[in-house]
Image (cartoon, rainbow, N blue to C red; front, side, top):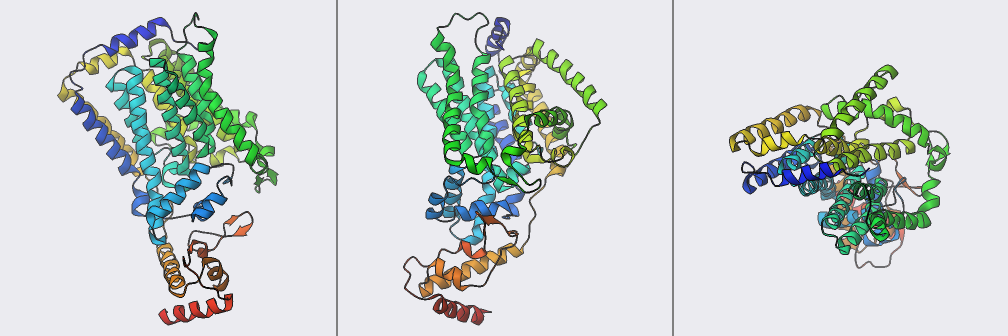
Length: 497
């Protein structure tokens, strides 16, 4: 698990090599273009914003400040998401009116992904000392639609925010490794503690950051014991966060009903099945999914043959790798994320769900880090000394190829123009509430049942959601009965109709 001295020296020698073709201006240009391509591939929800199914539960649970505060620790499915509650409330404030809320929510995933792409660039650039692996990493990660469901579905986009927080923890840990300053290690632990506050996969932040730090430990340790214990600090950050979450929400999360099989989340959590699914998915989804084969399900002989190929490729990469800690971190991301996700989804048939894009966010990043860490030093050196024209031509060809192959796979969450009309109706009624000084609670009781398109009978704690849950009401209400409020609202609504 430790980096050999020869590998470390090869990284150092490459870092000192000439990089004339990769001027600061050229690097910034390609970083900007890759970020633009990433945003382009994920811009569908921005042009066709739509709030669907689980989104409404999160949105209504964080609609007003008193809602966000009251529901701060209310889990959404198996996700305890206090940070998500606060960010959703903030997005609602930024939108200002119901009709603009879908647009505000649609921005979260794409912008969070662009942030992740930039953080990946910084991390790999620092790690290798080279622009080539860093630019390649951000292009291969960002300009891909394998995991797009985690970006264009608001409910799943919190996984991207958890990834951003994890990457911030990795950058802080990397700084501690490079400088030895304790504040960076403490900051890493803080980021790792915050990551699960967005999405359940954030619990991997601490263990994986610790894995990265241990990967740099010397083969023959001469460090004091306290230095060997220091890499465990990010893991302790996650442990503190997990302890708090289980104390507050353990019964709700572990007792979450799985209606498909009439059992609870704890009953259906199956690491053995999750490991089997992981081994299959690493053949069916990891590389094929990144290349565009989205629903491949291989028979057992193909899976076995695929593992033989993966094993040989892994050995080859390890022997000539530019940066072995990146290899180990990438492998950890792939295996840990798949085992965690598939163990929690073991009650589903593998064939019906392994291709769901939101499950492949972390594993795709792991594949990219593994590939970039396994780059031969000779290749990086050759690109470094190439002419600017050759660098531009090669980079443009790669970026063009990625866009051409990925663009046909762009998908958006189902769009229904009726939702805009429904939200306009909510706005109209809210204006009447302010005009007649009717509070939101009274208005909800006075109005007939109303569901916004896409809501589909969603519930919070057994209460069926309504479109009127998006009413704010008058900030200065007067006392009135439900019947009086009904007469006022119906008179205006019937007159406008």
